Structures are given as C-alpha cells and as structure tokens.
Length: 210
Ligand code: IMP
Ligand code: MG
Image 1 (cartoon, rainbow, N blue to C red):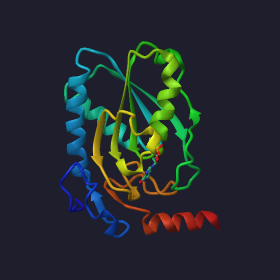
Image 2 (spheres, rainbow, N blue to C red):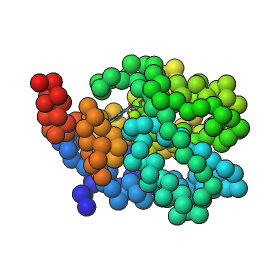
Image 3 (cartoon, rainbow, N blue to C red):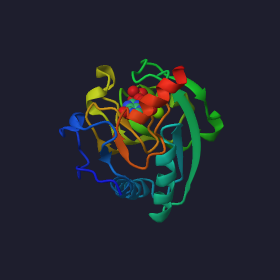
Image 4 (cartoon, protein in one colour):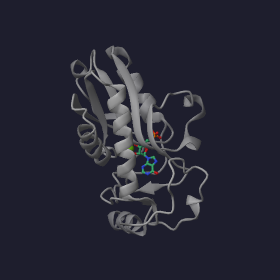
C-alpha cells in the first residue's frame, strides 16, 4: 500500500503543489474508506426510494464500481446505473467552458426518477452544470451530484452557487492522476491518486505525438 501523508477530507490547505509528480495524494485505502462513508450517507438519503446512478465516462468508472459495491454492502440495493459521456476538454488539461455530449441517455430512462450524477472530480463545474441543464426538461423526481474530488478554488465564479451534494475530498488546484482520473488518457488504472502529470503520462503523450 502506497503511503500518503494526508489523513483528512479537506486537503485544500496542504502543500500538495510541492509533491513530486507520481507522489501519492490519496492512497487506495483512504479512498475506499471515504467511498464507504459516502455510501452510508447516500443509502440514508435515498432510503425506501429507487435511485439511478448516472456515471460520467470515462473518469468516474472506477469510482462508480467501488460505489456500487459499497452501496450494496451498506444494504442499499435499490438502484440502477446509466452512463453518459461528455467532453469539456480535448485531451488538454484546461476546460473549454462548455460540454459536448458524446454519449447520452434516452430521457425515458430518467423521467420521474431520482438521479445521482457521479463524476470523478468537480473542477470548473462546467460538467455538472451542463448536465444538470441538459436534464432540466426531463422532470426528474430529484437531482443530486456525487464527486470523489472537488477543487473549490477552480469553480467558475458564475457557477459557484451550484450545490454539490456529496463530495469525497476537497483538494487544492493541483492536477491529479489515478483512480479513473487521467493525464492525456494515461494513468486511470493507478489504484492510488497521485500528483500528475506523471513522467509516465508525459512519455505516453510524447510517444503519441511521434
Ligand atoms: P469540470 O467540468 O471543469 O468541473 O471538470 C470536470 C472534468 O475535468 C472531470 O470529469 C475530469 O475529467 C477533468 N479533470 C479536472 N481536474 C482534473 C485532474 O486534476 N485530473 C484529471 N482530470 C481532471
Ligand atoms: Mg471526466
């Protein structure tokens, strides 16, 4: 198990910027413990209701799998899963400020349902707000968001009032990689979340450009 120096949910004031690329920010065990806590909260919130977890590909895939298992273990089994894919950046580290829907969900799967939108990280909030607006005409019974990570300092000022319902960890404005999160499509399989982009990711990108 890779060691992490941090033992808190709010990492925003910690000197993560000073870590070397590849150093662990959150290890797999810390992440799993927090996933289990979030699952308890979600199970409590939706008790006796049916839930649709809508995962945002590709970054939320690892989180979704662990969350589904954690919900089951928390005794909450009354859910379905759906997946959407949206893009806000073209293989770059900066957000374009708008969403492109690459894979959508037929509205009839969501109408009159409790929807929990799941992403790996809430950064500028462009993704969450864009998808919330896309769902607006559907008449959902309820809409909430779940993200493993949040970078509060990166929220676009005009989107700051958007409610984030369930958040795993808050982090400062530092690029991270692993547990589904990529740098240039590299590093999603790392069970830990590390500072990125890692040397491996840079080499991967350089090889693609040849
Ligand atoms: P937002 O729309 O700016 O909130 O961005 C959300 C998306 O940006 C996430 O789904 C991630 O794919 C990506 N993202 C933001 N920060 C990071 C990071 O530090 N590492 C990897 N992906 C990130
Ligand atoms: Mg993403």
